[in-house]
Length: 355
Image 1: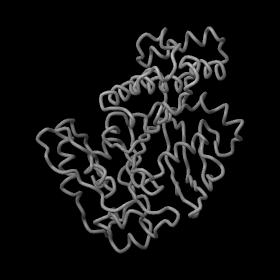
Image 2: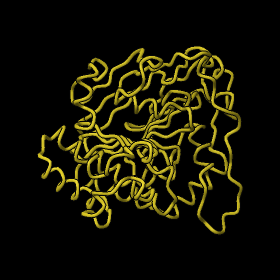
Image 3: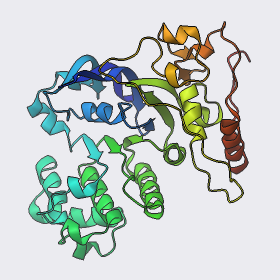
C-alpha cells in the first residue's frame, strides 16, 4: 500500500522549571492511504504530543523537535515554516480535538466556522460555502442543518458539537484526519454514534485517520493497525487482530486486562497495572516499563530492548521475545479477555514465523 505519512525517529521535549521533559523519544511509524492507525496508551505516554507535533502545533518554546522527520505526501513537515504549515493545516491535514467546546469559537455561528475553512482553502464564494456547510452538517448527521448552520456552539448538545467539529475538520477534504481522543467527553451511546460516523465517513471520503485514545475498547471498532505507546516510545505495533488476539508486550497485556467487560456474568474485578509511568525529566535506564512489569528480568533494568519482529506487521519491544528469555504466558485476566473476544468475533489465523 502507498504510504501517506511516515514518522522517523521523532524526538520532542519540553523545557520546564523541573528540567527537560523528554515527551517523545524516538518514535517511528507510518500510515497508509485510506488506513486508520490507532495510537493507544495511558495519559502521559506521549500520544497527543506526537499527533500535535505532526500538525506542528506544539508551542515553541517550551516545546522543541529535537530530532526526526515527518514525511507527509513526500515532504518533511519538520522543515516547513509556520507560514507553509498554515496552508497545510485544515487543507491537507484536519484535526478533531477532545473537547469541541474549547475548539469551536463560541462567538461565531457553527456555519461560519465551516465556511471559513471552505473560503480560505477552497476559495469558495460565501454563498457556495454556506451551501456546502449545510451539506457537511447533513453528512455528519446533524438534523435540520438549514437551521443549525445559523446557530452558535452553545445551542448544540455535546454530541452535536463533536459532529460539528468533524464537519469543520472534513470541510476541505483533507488527506489525513487526526482525531485526538474525540469521544472521551461523550457518553457511551453518543460515543458509539461518533465512532460509527467516522468509519462511515472514511469509506465515503477515503481519508486516512490517526486515532488517539487511551481506550482499547474503542480501538477494536475503528482501527486497521495499532501502536501502543508507553513513556514516549512505541512498545508494540501490529494489526488490530494481532494486538487483540496475540499481544506480546506486558504493557499491552496490562491494558487488555484493565478493559471493562459488558458481560453480565463477568463479575471479575478489573486488573490494574501497578505503579505509575516514569518521570520523563529523567527517563529510567533500560526498559521504562520494567518497574511495573511483574515479568521483568535483570536485563530490563540495564538495557533498552530493541523492536523484535513477530511477523511482517507485528513488532514489540520486550526482552521476553529474545530467544534466550524464559517462556512467559499472558496473565489469566488477559487470557480471559481474549477468550471473550474470541467468542464474540471469529478469531483470525495468526501465522507464526516458525510455521
